[in-house]
Length: 326
Image 1 (cartoon, rainbow, N blue to C red):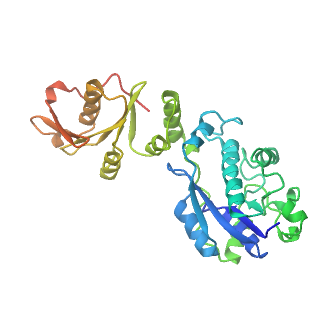
Image 2: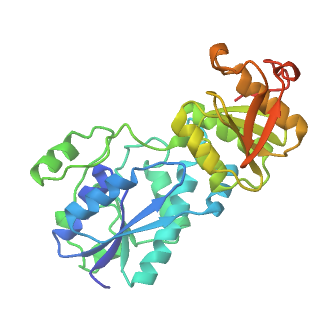
Image 3: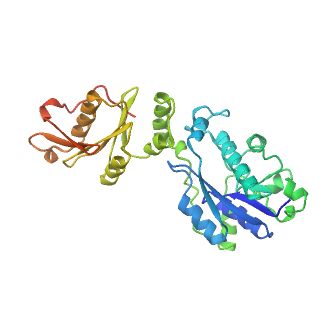
């Protein structure tokens, strides 16, 4: 077996420590960061950690296929819409493919036994290893002393005696090692999966309830603005500040129509079926969320995907009974 591994890098401390343990044993490490466009782990922190440790880092997008994991997880959800066990199986399958492509011998992660209640207890750790087809090839060096030896250990590629026996949710030992080994610039433990956030999870539930084939673009849009459901096939996203207004406008394309007011009000991205009724409802929502002193006295003008549309205030009401905030 080659003294070469692929290490999943999240930008957090645990994965950085796992890499350091490999480097100290003369193992060549290829870092792998798996990117979710709607945000999860901190990409910039992952890049910083890789640079500090002196390892190459490959950034790969998980793609739209990952959304099937969220839709129907075999092992269920955590506190929100987070399919932790199924997610790791999917990620580790990608890591296995990359391991084979790079000619590496095994995969390394920073998982700690008992640290996360859903995915890092003994049974889910075993399930993840088997279903990702990495039996014997998935090394968790921070908790190795509590786990069965992997093939790299049995073959002498990795010295098991130099691996750790960490467990539980406390991170005091990890912080002490970080100070000792001069590792910094990592993400704080408070960061993590957006799908565990209550508000994000509610918007994700709405998306999957109304879209048969959502895309990673749809998931990315969940991080922007206020979401209002107009119909089973149409929703509106309203910008909360000028930056979000610009970002929403940048998402305009087929199936995503942006109304940008020519007065000081929020932009509205209409996602789904577009017709005059949806246009008027979206314009009414903009009107409802614009301060009276910011509204023009005569006609209201909007840019709609680059074209100008004007409408009288009298034809729009500031209430939309059809709309439901998400």
